Amino acid sequence: MADPSRLHFDATDLAAYLDRIGYSGPVAPDLPTLRALHAHHVAAIAFENIDPMVRRTPDLSARGLMAKLVHGGRGGYCYEQNGLYLGMLQQIGFAAHGLMGRVRWGAPADTVAPRSHMMIHVTLPDGPYLTDAGFGGMTPTGPLKFEADIVQETPHEPFRLLRDGSDWLLQAEVAGTWSDVYRFDLNPQIPIDYKASNYYLANSGDSFFTQGVIAARHVAGQRMALGNHSFTIYPTGKAPQRRTLKDAAEICDTLETEFGIRLSDRDALIARIEAKKT
Image 1 (tube, helix red, strand yellow):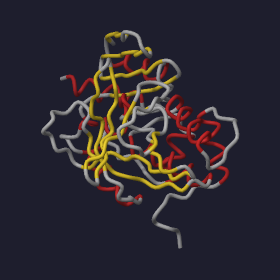
Image 2 (cartoon, rainbow, N blue to C red):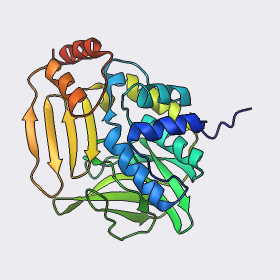
Image 3 (cartoon, rainbow, N blue to C red):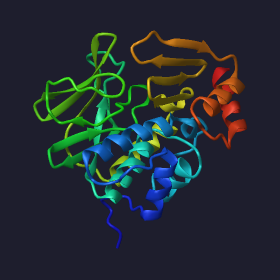
């Protein structure tokens, strides 16, 4: 009987994943591998919400994640990104499991959000690390050691972890200001724990992911973000470069060229964008 506490990938899946993210270096359950996979993943596989936009619930099974994110040239949101990433870490031999947190990014200080974001806990010989390949525009681009109140550099912005009782708070420093990213505890999650939230986020009219097209990608030296008709490049340490996209076709063009997303359902997405506009 299959173990319900994890998704099951095999050596062939791992080889295809490594090819998808463009990583050909050594693979072992150690910190250099974790750092390399994290950076390559967020550069190669875009964060995007096309399935929720066209009212299709993402398939979080191992087969579904391989078909879409690895072989299909698509991206996805946190349950897909981190579900795939976690499964590959476990296949390599990392001691890793999922976590769940409350999004704080861009929210008023008194907002209490539901537990809706997935991230990953990894245990290494020198201690535990947080790794997360799926938080959209503010995705950390390197693993962070579970050590409170220290500034930790990543290939992009600095991050830090704070303690509040049994909870942890992730913060990012942007333009000299520390802002909350998400709050979470260390209670391990298994695949079924994400199922209800995945369905809600993909189908509810109140969900952020059904309101408009979003995408993000994080390559060396810059982040890229798309929100409906706004496309922005954030060069590390420099002023953002913003461009307005004139119509749904240009949005789709940008998803394909800048984010590397293969749009097999381009017409359906254009129709949905136009419907949301009216």
